[in-house]
Length: 300
Image (cartoon, rainbow, N blue to C red):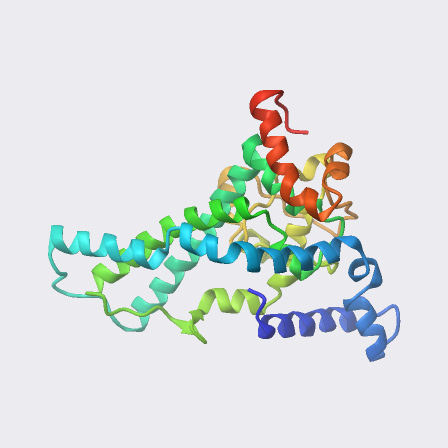
């Protein structure tokens, strides 16, 4: 996700937004850099926490998550061989460009639906919210905030996504006699690659970007900014990552009609105080989980 190409394209899009819309500070490169990397975001404790969480999760939890989580390929292989033994080989296997494109779209939908289901559950189930609120402690957003996640939060998302993705891989393998490759760019699902190249990282940034009418199909950065606002009308809105129609189906979509002034973070001052340090972000969710299970209930 933090691939240099995605970050470079994000910077170029941010530069275009600056020169076309927000160039009130002048047209110099220095003014552009101050716009893209403001001190109010990158000289904060929140940014330091984002960097630290990224490093800690990669070092301490990356291997654990990869071993414990279901792997989509292994699961898909198991389902594929079961289907083969039950129904036999397909007489006219799917192949060609159209089949590759459909496979690509199916994988995109599976990955995004897995994220949405996990995200929705983390917001709606109080026990899971204790771990997901780590992501929402950020009072300012930068691209690394996307990975500001508690390991248990990530673990649940990976497993849900792997189940859906494994099923899609199995169906594609069965229908093509295990010979179909999805359309890809640099080894990445082509649709996901393009989405990440056209400003997805601005979802976690200070730069407002709406997709206009396309907000009804895709989650724009502006829509995700709304998700991080703790205003009452914004709570639990826009929980999709790529496609916004999941939120439309569940009644959680909020499309801003104009730029809104937002205050980001947690609504609860108690939560904000209890999750102020790096250690708190890892340990407090377990303490709060114990409180919810044995002492009291309530979201805030």
